[in-house]
Length: 363
Ligand code: NAD
Ligand code: IPM
Ligand code: MN
Image (tube, rainbow, N blue to C red; front, side):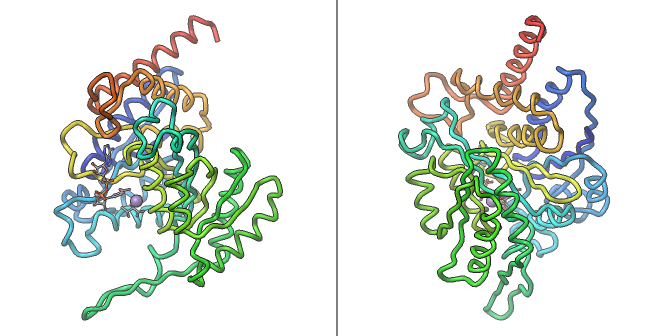
């Protein structure tokens, strides 16, 4: 597999270094080749190359099998002109690669129930995927701008854009608990009325999947009270951005969630969190989101689900043993939190132990 890594800003390099360590260990355990090139993106790229995303980087990403991105964003960039903003680099990359669908799984493993923002009985059993439309909506709508005390953005969706993300959601649900909740604001917005109509049409083609539409305000409430009722949450670019962070709160930390951005020339894998400037450089970043992104990569692009299973099981074993970074720590924990490097080493150790058990066991 040929992989381009874009570490980016803040904790981005810390969590991609961790995820690449785990990925290399997994590939080595099976004697598989892995070719990794690293390039700058975001504010780091503005510093070294004068732009948050260069054409060379886009070309390198297009030529790769997959891209792993850490995070972009920097406090110094707050007042930079729009074309030099780190976030513009990420949005341009998703667009250049043609990634229009974003899968953001959020699961509360047994070992993490105490870390959830929710009471244990509410958090238990949470296992959902936000299927977020990533190529359109309010993020890319034209016209946009600001002038003399007024600013504007455009929210627009075509039937085709909604149809393709809806099909993706139903395909994902078919492999899971077969339930799709399409989230919109159809009581107010024309785009949402179109969204709901197209989602209902697509639903007819998947009779084995239970379908419902839900207004976004209620969905936010349900996610806080009964998150285990959701399987696949199908929604637009902006609503998906917000609801996936809320789902991270249900799990216990934004640092714990990974994502896959699909549909284009090359799939892009990114943790859901940002550059976390408040903890960058302290060695405390949670690498779970970046590691989860790598397991999504192994399942989605790599066709290597058994490697992904090994990594997921190793992470869960660490959590079960009480290991966690301090974003997931609680007063009830028996031992103090560990840093990014120690957590990653523990994952790599358990990965090695699983592999040698298999070799000894002859499987
Ligand atoms: P953030 O995700 O960077 O941080 C929010 C909170 O979560 C912070 O308290 C942070 O410490 C914590 N957190 C995030 N990731 C963590 C991790 N791996 N381990 C432990 N704790 C973690 O969101 P923000 O503060 O709203 O944004 C900061 C910058 O990141 C902004 O510039 C924003 O644009 C950017 N951002 C980038 C992406 C991306 O690259 N995909 C996503 C979100 C935000
Ligand atoms: C995310 C981020 C990005 C988004 C920003 C940084 C452009 O919040 O990946 O969730 O809004 O998509
Ligand atoms: Mn976000």
